[in-house]
Amino acid sequence: MTYKPGLHILSEFSSDEVNKLSFFDECKTLFNQLIIENGLEKVGEVYHDFPGGGFTAVICLTESHLSIHTWPEFNLATFDIFLSNYKKDNTEKVKSIYQSVLNFFEGKEIQKTEIVR
Image (cartoon, rainbow, N blue to C red; front, side, top):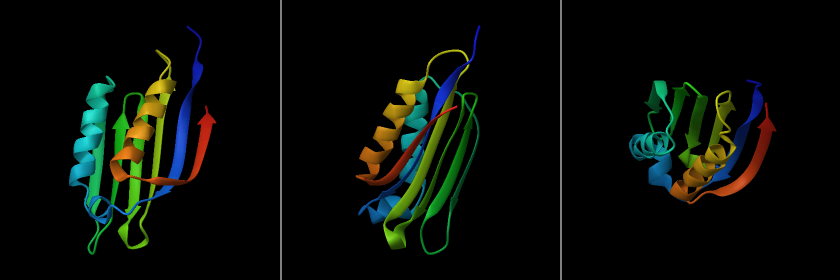
């Protein structure tokens, strides 16, 4: 078996969905749903709401990770997802999960970087 590089997407987006940017509960539900739907395996997670609003979350997966950091006071979030392609090509899963997160927050992409690694 030869290793094929996986896709890593790093992004910043704006959103007027201040409630969704303020607390992690709804985002955690979304992430859990996306992990199950895409047949991924979670090995650890940390979610943290900040006093006054905003949250951070990092989910470790056997395939790698996804993370989000939000600033509702600026209508901003950063998000990244990387899934390695060690056992199978996960490129389309990365793109699909990224789009689902943007849709959930009704986000407008400010910048996006795709790295194949």
